[in-house]
Image 1 (cartoon, helix red, strand yellow):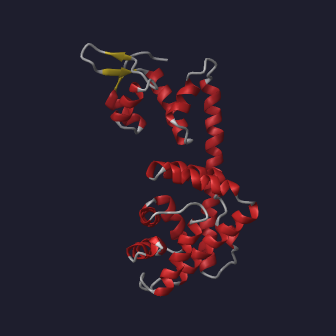
Image 2 (image 1 turned 45 degrees about the vertical axis):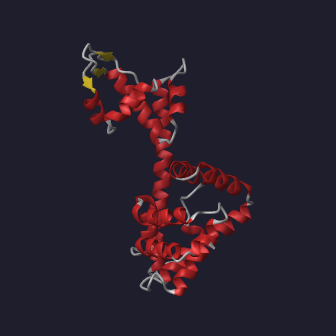
Image 3 (image 1 turned 135 degrees about the vertical axis):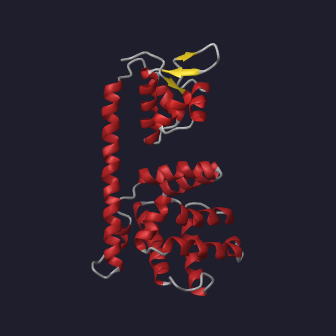
Length: 255
């Protein structure tokens, strides 16, 4: 392994698809120190540092926090090769789940064309509690962590039957919305479906108008949500966003 200080901050950042600011932050918190700092203050990184950054990127891909990653890398018996094998297994599991989600989208398209029958349960094949937990973590970065904690607490308190019912009710909302595509988002029937969606969310937490509007925007703009809803109908993401915006603007979200 070469120990030459061959990478500047920008060069390593570009190679790893991170920002120079990220590398400086990793240095500040002690997660990834430069291999060498010149008299001019410029940071340089060697191959060992690049390999450590690769480990950090893999762990981030698996949704670990920086403190968790630092603790793992600091273990005296840390085995890079064994860890890479674990990364591979975890990523393969994610690939398998993504394949299942793609299959769900394909089957939903056929269902909407009337070419196959699909139960509401099948609409959510590929979504699991691991995914739910990851969305909670991402939501915590956008909204009040207390709301996220309440959502997690409520979900874990439900029986399996309750969870199935809540998911079915949520799935039916989106099917009913597809049937109303083409109408004015302010149409009474459309707004009634949005009100049911709002009520379904209350099974998790009490959403504020800002959160409702934010979810509507995410349904159209966030690739994960947009891909799923577009699988139900290509026009659904944008229609949901407009309908939810109308619902919030009318003051109904506060009732």
